[in-house]
Length: 332
Ligand code: NAD
Ligand code: DAU
Image 1 (cartoon, protein in one colour):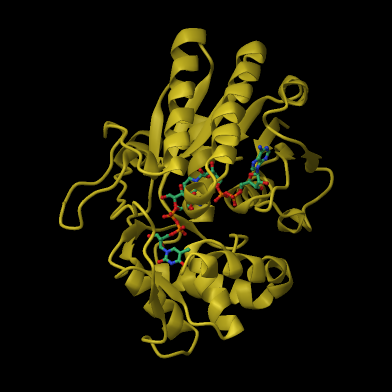
Image 2 (image 1 turned 90 degrees about the vertical axis):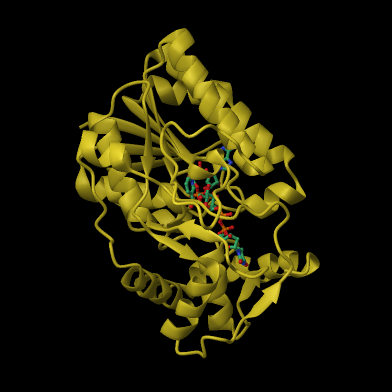
């Protein structure tokens, strides 16, 4: 049994990863999570106690991080401030967690020689035009747009520097937009699903032409395990499942799947600096490491996600009113 440390394991993608690791490996997982507004211990409920240990703490706490790295064979780093709209309102926590936090982990990886996998985003590449046939590859130049994506880009560059300068045993993955269970209601898909459940009309930024490349969180998890298992140290792998859709189509599909008229939504104030389109070319991961996604039917995955939010209202209800009040204050 190998010992894996997962930062941010009480968040959306981190908790999906912990569930995936418990189901598909015999690793023991230690979760390090500060339980910010985005973390929820209920996302780890039901997992066997002999397989998962939870430690509440901050990734910028160097002494704690050092102690946990000393006891780990590998580390997967999900913890982050993750929401673009929050980063436009208050960027400082993004600098602390995403930059200083990653630095703190890299110093521990350097001291202990620990295998380290860094979770990042396609947003580091900026955006594409709607009519551009191009997709992002591992060679696309970095060009982030928001405080969030610029701090993720900065953290990726720290990893590359620590590999080259100090021989840290690291890999990086940049994934597209995830959907699935345990996603905070501030994000697009859960916000609209929970709006419909609450009788609130979904809110679409601007015209809704912006395109995101959707992947199920469980496919993200299988890709990360594949990279940990077979990836080459120092390499970056893009993770995506060919799921490009514009926001208008996604809102209309949510409404249809929830039995409402497809037109029953509002256009609201657009996001400042709103990236137009993301699209991932994951050829390297598929051909070199043999990974492929399991969730190929977005409509079926979305229907299952809607059912999860219907069945788990107690998981999200506490956050909903505050999130909607925040958006309302910005005309969104
Ligand atoms: P999330 O906001 O749902 O979860 C983040 C978790 O990190 C929370 O549990 C939070 O408590 C924890 N955390 C925050 N600051 C911390 C700190 N200083 N110390 C310890 N824990 C802290 O985020 P998510 O959507 O699950 O994203 C996870 C990672 O995946 C991030 O690195 C994000 O950049 C990346 N990513 C997300 C997506 C997506 O679609 N959501 C896509 C690609 C990459
Ligand atoms: O591409 C990967 C990124 O995907 C991750 O790095 C981020 O952590 C994650 O939050 C996500 O970023 P986005 O900004 O793309 O996700 P968000 O869910 O905030 O918005 C998705 C799209 O929907 C985006 O074009 C903005 C739009 N939107 C969002 C909200 C919350 C709306 O139209 N209405 C809304 O109410």
